Image 1 (spheres, one colour):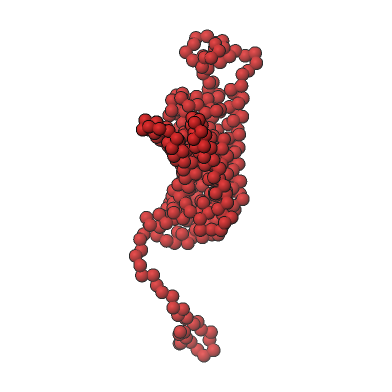
Image 2 (image 1 turned 90 degrees about the horizontal axis):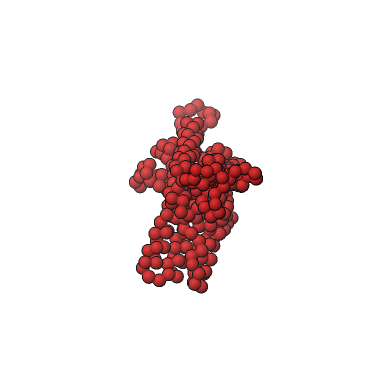
Length: 329
């Protein structure tokens, strides 16, 4: 059906209105909370490549399987009578650091860089949502994705462990050991999501976003490891470190604990991964030390404050970035 306009002199070009038969939406309009929830769920799915082709699922699948391998190996070893090989709170530190770096660097551009490159943000902000709703939904969705990557392998490790122990007391011991590990995993997810989303939001090009995230995590970790190795290495010809509670300045007797220097503690502040270890050891009273980070003692509060400030700064930058984009749309 077409309706030709009238009232114009003959020979004047006129417009034509075509009725294409589209139906208007007559259902309920649920408002902002449902929009944020839908965007959060979409972000979570995008982090694992759901709703897209097979290629988008390759990296999430490989990284998830790699994270679960220690849990599977532990279950096989315990079934043969061996004790638990993997701790819940540390899991496998080198594997976790490498795999999570790959996961966040490759997948976080799917959440933010695509929308920036496609210039669809004005479509989001034309809906009844505030500028802070978009980054909030992205952050919640990617935090949940990182939590799945870190904590689901712990649950598999727990399931394999309790399947090979006997008695309620042994199961309860495994459960008590699991809870701190889950909380450490939550800390990893919250911080990694904040940092990676902020860095990826600075560029609409996926290679630049992936490179920025990967370089930040790898460079800071390598720098912290180098500083830790330098500060913990014995210095030839210099007096040894002072023993805790001793009054002398000479080297402590063999087998006695040595207080790490302040420089060795400060060296752990340069990477999120060493900050994770410092906070974990501080909350655990240093009973389960990591491989390289010195026991922080009271300095652990500084690790926690630096980690908190880093997360808050990245979230503030992320929200400011999209507040500016909303004003430009």
